[in-house]
Length: 369
Ligand code: MRU
Image (cartoon, rainbow, N blue to C red; front, side, top):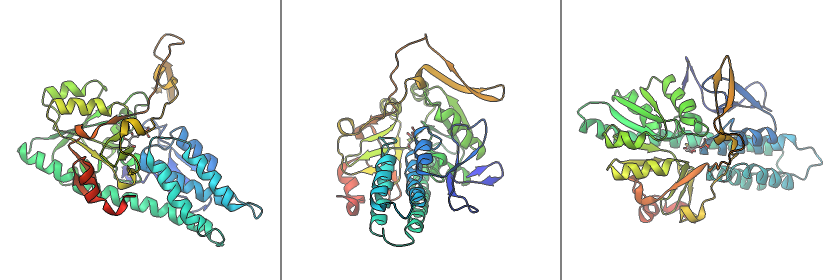
């Protein structure tokens, strides 16, 4: 995707140094565009934990590169099996809700354990991480191709008046490797000349909407307006939203969706106002071992300080300010669950289906356990 006049993806190996993985430091956006080098499994852990990289598909890919860096750190004395198992556990423990993290680590680990005694096991780890990136990119592209049909249909119904899409958090290319999930159809529709406008939820407490989605859309010339997290319901009542498109961090076999905190409230408002609510994600975000999102998905709880403060840009630096009385207790749940009954459709690389166990089964029969 575009950044100024250049095309970027969110993570890539350094061409001149095979021991370095490069990422865009998302904590600094949109104020400064900085690229950060990751050189060790600890660097990767820290980058995922402090949200230098974030978004379900991207943290999975980053962790796969983490296993590659772990292998580079091994010495001839290292017990590679224990080393990889420890690194895998360590990386998976970073963030609990997005299933892509454990999926990517387990997928890589299985390959590596089967080739432990090969002299090129590190190369295999690198190739596996690169393959994950390519697959995620391909999936996101296809999500765009399926999702754009929804926007084309809405544009037809509106006789060419701009289609208003509401999105929450950042489910754009920064959260994936490229294209994004919820934003993939938006970019494609824009390229096809369909007039559109995106309502961007600011997404407290970390403001992925105001900081990342607004920046991404701006870089790619998409018309958008930033709104506070509480505005969507009113806009829906006033018929100023045609469709809601969001991403997912984990989707159960019955179609329940864990996504950034606040997604559920948008789904409720959309349901009350008969507005279609779509969830867009690659199949690597399915967790077929879980059925009941509310009972079974672990929700990440983050530092309360993210709630009691807010950060922004002032006098050339990123600053954090407190927004409540000193010592105010705060709770910081990172995600919530949108039950399948509130979802109009799931858009994956395989097409659009209802958030319904049987429909999901039909589309993904080969992936069921
Ligand atoms: O806490 P974050 O920023 O990692 O949360 C990200 C989201 O909730 C996204 O909507 C989700 O990962 C889907 S992105 C393709």
